[in-house]
Image 1 (cartoon, rainbow, N blue to C red):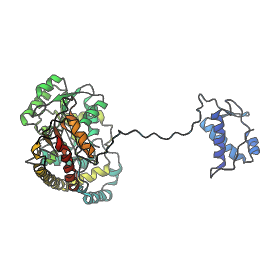
Image 2 (cartoon, helix red, strand yellow):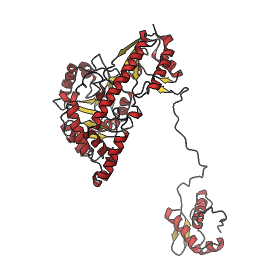
Image 3 (tube, rainbow, N blue to C red):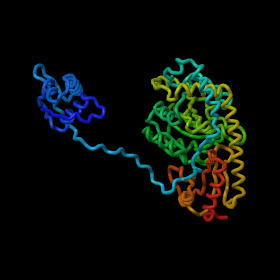
Length: 471
């Protein structure tokens, strides 16, 4: 006869405790397959508990398949294919992080936005207004594939006024970051094509394409960007470029080269150019460079931009503009997707753009970055290492290049900086085909570092590098 103790239930109901005890005996093999269990009445009497308690425990075991009943014969233990052995619970394993002896206190390698520049009060007010005044059904209904129409209309107007693009709202697709849009583009255009990427270029971009099972070719550039002849010989169908401010070199592609690439794309129906316009709003001298799509007459350019540079990196809203025929194909092929950005954020961003807050924010940030850049250039011109430094590309966007007169390798200088708690990256770090460790060209991302931390960190950096520089 089964015998169990009910002395220490700790708030657990009697029938649950009985159910667990019998289940444990079955799993451990104490109760064998096909063994007959005591009748409900006999077990209740033996254990000194109510009949309904035993009935409830047997019922739960039967529902889960540990026991089964036969009419007028009673309950029997089920045959389990493989009763798992009981084990002590193992602690959850934490994924190992790359070991780093000296964690960097400050990074010149990563672009960021100063936290105190985000328009919190304006955004909070617009969000409250969205929650109280917007159509309730629109707020909580499924988002259309391309995003809510008010945001796409606001973006179409903004692109016409500030980027010279005359596009319909239906051509605009909203996504939670450019990485999401890249994934959609691969699904739209197909994985059978060869994708050409700039070398040097953005490492995460190549990683995204690789995880999508896309074959990539990494094409070298001259001082104007990728050459059409090199592109033609690569066998690629899809070209991904950053023509207005190439990352990381800072190259601005001239119009002659742009037309050459558009001519390449027009030669085959399978060819397209993905134009990443990631920081076009922050050209710090002259007017922003017109996008490649503005001179595209053959519907060959997919335009991509993001709000992560203008508002905040964690503001995961990006968008792409598809040529009309690709937009139709997108809805036919991928129209089952829902937009990956919440309606609340989309409606709020639409008002932020429509009411002129976005334009004012951009103008304010452009002035902020220009002043920050100017002060940094003044510092570099006056610091002890000035004679060994040469600045390039300081007007075209939110980072510039700093050439160092040195015989030391880039990896050696990187380690010297890391010992001071500073993370730096060189142009050589962004090549897929590693040509050398001696680019001697430092990338300067300065936008998100507060002045009270920036200049002490620069003093520390150039103090550490000074022995390696030719002055």
